[in-house]
Figure 1: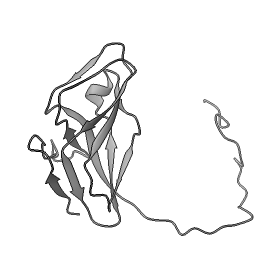
Figure 2: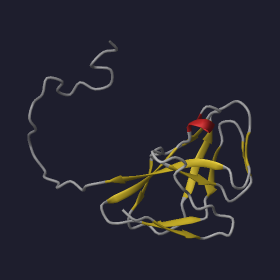
Figure 3: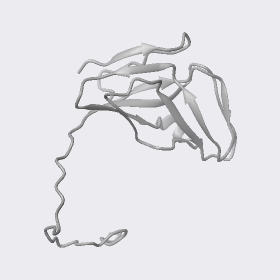
Amino acid sequence: MKLKIKKLDENAIIPKYKTPESAGMDLSSTIDETIDSMEIKLIPTGLSIEMEKGYEAQVRPRSGIALKGITVVNSPGTIDSDYRGEIKIILMNLGKEEFKIVKGDRIAQLIISKVEQAMIEESGELNSTERGDGGFGSTGIK
């Protein structure tokens, strides 16, 4: 699968895989920003992408900054194959201290995944299962 990447900002950094077996490539900020505790900010990457139909790009947190309380609010965020706008990252600071982002900092990761669209069929009945409609916590802890 070929991923085309367009720079929309001269400060944008083209993402790349850091190791031969990396699942994700890092996305970087094009701005300096401070995120206060419990605050949400939209951070631009200065990038737009094009991928083949049948794929999506998922935006996920980076573990290194997640340990500091920084997460992607809508994780995983989905970028559909027909979207051509700028990739922007919705970050939230769950930590107690403010978090400073410097232009060029790696703030999230991008994963490319194959997707299929389901054939929707309305039905008045569904097959029964052992679990049934048991929801949250219904299978226990151990």
